[in-house]
Image (cartoon, rainbow, N blue to C red; front, side):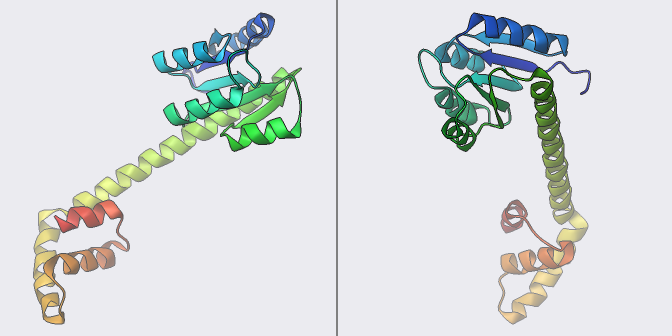
Length: 193
């Protein structure tokens, strides 16, 4: 893990579980907050960013999978781990189908839980870096497509392609695909302007 402190919201109606989970995660360098029911959890999730949500499947005011669904909509990149005191295949399948990254049964093996949290955060961060690099790569390609030198070449070539029945926009797109090897929807849109 990096020096950044990751934030965890622990959602459970058992105050002893909240205290123990919070203490153990803090010892591992996480910043923790707790919520004793679903409404409190959703309120805290709206007010602040959390990297990880540990969600009990049974809460007094709503099912943990309902919370999971709301969190998937509001923060799809966060790590969501369901915890249940009632181990059943049905609960696990329902949680994982609702978007949980993992499912644990109580009593929890904290070594495995913490490793899982760290692995999931690392996967998420790597994916975000990859997406950022891909986004930068696409922007670079678009800037090359839009450069003056390329535009001059594309205009001249597009005029030539006019003899083959292609309009100027179609010709520029055809040239971009052949010159760059591929074109994304956003590149095609920028060429179509």
